[in-house]
Image 1 (cartoon, rainbow, N blue to C red):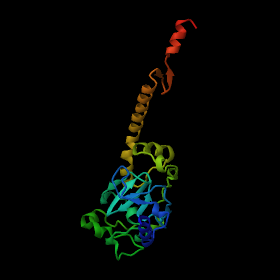
Image 2 (cartoon, helix red, strand yellow):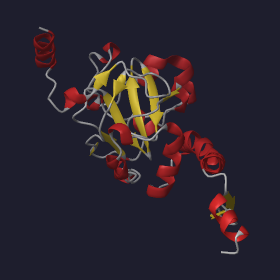
Image 3 (cartoon, one colour):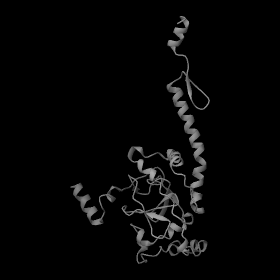
Image 4 (cartoon, rainbow, N blue to C red):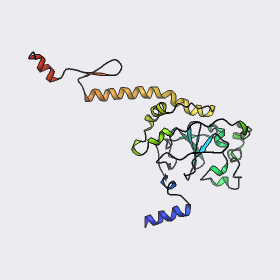
Length: 245
């Protein structure tokens, strides 16, 4: 009976089998945004914009300038990995090119989008009010003929699914090894740089933790310069040397 109800629900919503893999009510370690993307999604460039969207996901999911962006329940979130952890982004800190993406690329548009032109950007100045509009004058006026280049997609993340999906403290090291792109958008850099500055500290902490764990497992090993180890004398060595063997 439960399977039948699920099948009817998906049929009514018009969700494809691939899209149905996206589940709801999931917290990925940061802010719970109610979505879970279990595998690296297909991302397609929004024509004329340096932004990608996910055509097979039933959510408002984008990629811009090295970060993923989701608009869920009236709030924006960003992450450097396709399935989070997600960080809440206040309206003043959302990049303008994300806000300029036309309404038609929002697969779960909120109710306040109703009646807005599909080929135009959402009316964020109306939604967020006078204060936001005054700080973002002419936010939707830009030279379409000279749009910036889109950032390369971090396709290395396809290898990380299921149990292989890295924890938040591991994601920075994996990104540094596999993705050399640096954000160009000043607003995006404000999200990215604080984390990047913390990465060496996290790596050093992880290195110390590994050394402590190894020391506990192998108490006779002696640390050497460069992080290598040399085995100390074992009980068998002592007995051999004592016998002159």
